[in-house]
Structures are given as C-alpha cells and as structure tokens.
Length: 87
Image (cartoon, rainbow, N blue to C red):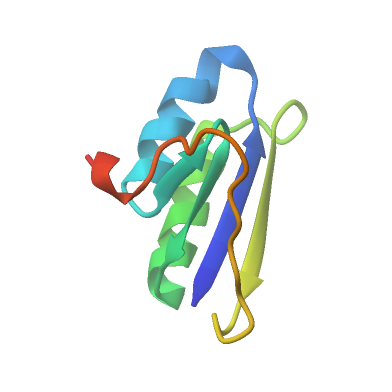
C-alpha cells in the first residue's frame, strides 16, 4: 500500500519522530512522508510512533491509498527530501 504521513509533533519529540518515519518512508517535506509500505510495516510504524508521541499534544495523520493507479504528484517550487536522502 502507498501512504502519506503528516505529523504535528511538539518540538522536544520531533527529531525522534522524524528518524522513526525515515526508517519506513521517504521524507518529502517538513513533517510529510510518503511511500510504499506493507500492512505489517505500517502497523509496526504506528506502534513505534505511539511510544514516542503524546496523544494529548501531538498529531499524526496517515492517508492510506490502496493503489497508486489514480495517484499523481505535482511539485511546485523546491523539492525537499526525496528518495536520494534515505538513511
């Protein structure tokens, strides 16, 4: 499946969330990740993020696309992140 993950995390935890998301997805912009991931991988990522974030202060939104058949991507301006910056 293809997912787009966005987050709004309190500053003290943002580095941990950034590193965790980079283990599974491609960083495309500040607080935005995307990429192919298995169901098990997504479940593991969500569990690991759940250990880092505080539900009362932080937010993570995951858009799940079952197929990329109707997906298109348009970039205006500077492209940040990208697949060449995978750790």
